[in-house]
Image 1 (tube, rainbow, N blue to C red):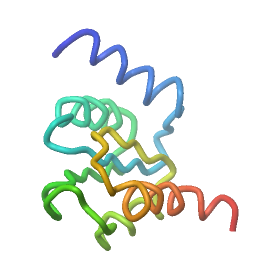
Image 2 (cartoon, helix red, strand yellow):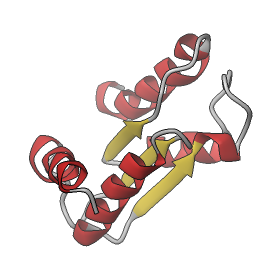
Image 3 (cartoon, helix red, strand yellow):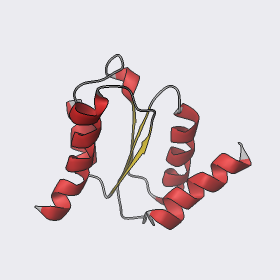
Image 4 (cartoon, helix red, strand yellow):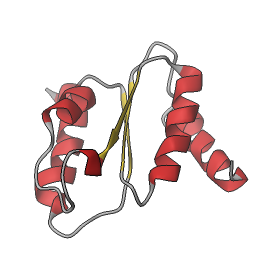
Length: 109
């Protein structure tokens, strides 16, 4: 495994988000950044057994203009969501922004 990716992944999971063993993590990635998503998944799984993993292209062609129900449910039920994917034109209003809203909605509602 690439040491830089491993170091960055540890920083994301262990330091920035401080994922805990009792928490649930959801990782959303794409084919282009799959290696990064897999590193985050590996490190999250070392901390908690509750890890959801989604590859965007498993649901639709890019740009994706909706949030798949399974992905939405997992994000809403997670303590931490990790988005390791490229941005495609048109995805911000109908895919990426809703994911942020689902993540934070439980915190501000």
